[in-house]
Image 1: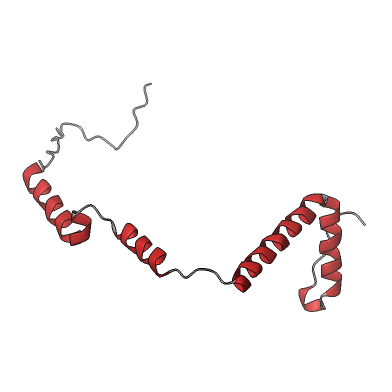
Image 2: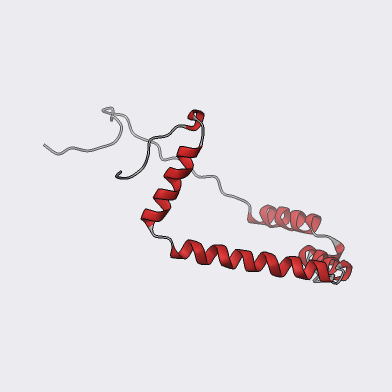
Length: 118
């Protein structure tokens, strides 16, 4: 016995094929042009995007960094490098031990079971 999937079929009833609607490509093209021309600003039509316009404003108004700002940036970068170096040297076991010490120091409100053996 052959099994045919799908919906139930009634005897003596012919199935009419569904007709697909044809889309008018001319109307669709006109709508796309209307939307694209409406969305563009005058600068974008000249080839200058909004991003480029904003970027140029930022560079024009940017003030040179003071000595204190330069020092702050360098110290921050050094701290970040030192932190990355320390994290790189830790093993998984060290990280688990540190996490367990953190959990022990917190109150019971944050109580969680210890992780790992021991």
